[in-house]
Image (cartoon, rainbow, N blue to C red; front, top):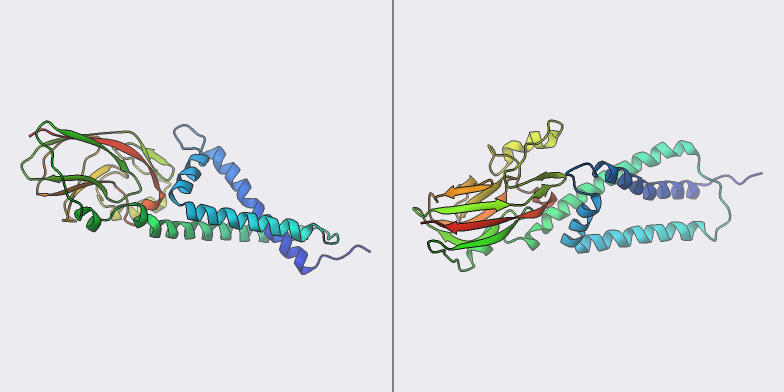
Length: 261
């Protein structure tokens, strides 16, 4: 008479299914993301691994330990029949729930780690500023995931500058240049939060500027043009997004600032 599957067998089957589901999801997602003008999944993964190496190492260790435990537990033990297939929908549901919770946890951790990689306004103001003379210019990279990219420039009312931006950056999977992009109609989350953007009336990820320390001195730059400061302050640049959600941005654009007068 064949041996009946015990509770331990059911548990191992569920764990094995949960461990296998992400690979199927990754394969399907990679196929979807290979459409024109979309980043490949490996680019997104590499970007996050470079930005959060501790999290990446922890996830790799967890997956390796889980796989090792499954093979160890099923290798030398006596034969156990497969679990009832009626448990598969339950395992799939648990896998989806675990994936959602894991993604949410990574989002929260990413937001908390953001200050470790990007300067905050107080740190920027503590650095000695510089100025540009008439005809002088400087070029810098503006990172999409940083709420404040320091130009190190102190500008004054009455001066005139020419700003030019080039390149592309990403809001998770949405690609745009400094001109920004309009969220698709199916992106309900962005529709709900569009009023919370730092520049609510402007497009997502449009290049914006702010004069520190005044939080109200924020303005749209886009792909560039002539610009006259309305007040004195330290110029910082950013991608237009909701505060607290810069963790899912990546890439950078090149910005050249030239003083005209």
